[in-house]
Length: 254
Image (cartoon, rainbow, N blue to C red; front, side):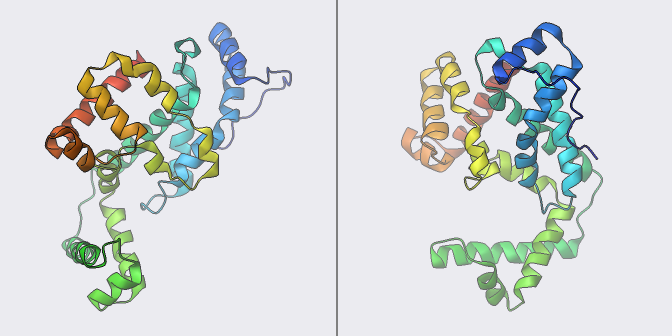
């Protein structure tokens, strides 16, 4: 299990994180790196918590997040003008997702779990249309004539066997944005600023891509809403988003 990185004996590190990053870039000293990691472990903790209830222990997820945080510190270039959290967050999320994908590669979903989950999903879709909102667990249970705890057990079992399902929901369609993955209710997450990266990079995209970025990441529109606004299919917007994300990743790691 990865705990907080042991702090070096030195106590007179620069209080300003930018100065500390500059010092690390100059010296590439492990003690400086570890001090930076200690200052940003909150980021690994926040992100790790949002991947709970997927059939994997929190400590395992946190360990992966901490390793990714160390990698991000080592690869970060402060001279590019981006904030570290803007760089580190997709790195940590990506490593966690890769861990889940690797873990799920050898798992086969039992037919019984698959069929039960499909019933829950169908009930959820039906009630969503009927109620014009996302149904509650007890409403789904009443519709299926089962206990609410049975609904939760079915969903949990599905998550255990089909770990990749969260990866699809986190990256496809209307759930790509990090603020949706992390959650707007985390006050700590207000410290994470991603728009500075978008604002500095947007000029490198063509007009259609800039319009998409503005609608998706600044106006918080869904893929469906963007498709309607731009007069194209949602499939086109999905492909456009993947293209934009690939270019963003290239800019981050260039």
